[in-house]
Image (cartoon, rainbow, N blue to C red; front, side, top):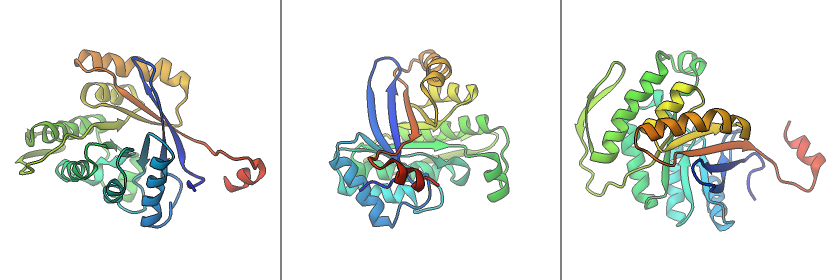
Length: 246
């Protein structure tokens, strides 16, 4: 049985009508043991869902869990929503993502995000300064490692000069959590799309789509993905369902 706090994902292709349905897991507390989380992804594949996206909060390491789940599945798309960039150097992020992608045989998607200033500064004791510029520099390294296997970049906030020795690298599609104009432009220019949280049709149509589409077009990229996550609870017992939400 799917965790009752799983979140429905509707993915929209902005240039042609394509709707895919998946599950966002781990956003509301524990999803159970490591094995139970793997079993949930297996069930999602058996139930015909298109994707499962794992939160990266205070539970098991999501990339490791998804690698284990990839060995038990063969069709379903799996991804992170989202790995927090301030917690990992882009080299470590890329190495983990490329490793999971190889295990998943091309089904893995790396979702990354900035997190939030109170978390970054108060919990992790790091500096949340010029976040959009930080993300642009981070993606410069990730994209270079992803496509060429090497990086020679030094920015204001991060940098890397290295060549990976992975011989069987499989590129990983990258998406970022983006809602503001600057981040949406970065998403359209540098990634495969955006990951949204509790965002409705009106906002997607009037705000998200115009900005990300224009940025993608200006960078000779097409069909940016929009992965919209919204909490739902499917039930035939409304009163019990309401109680379970509090």
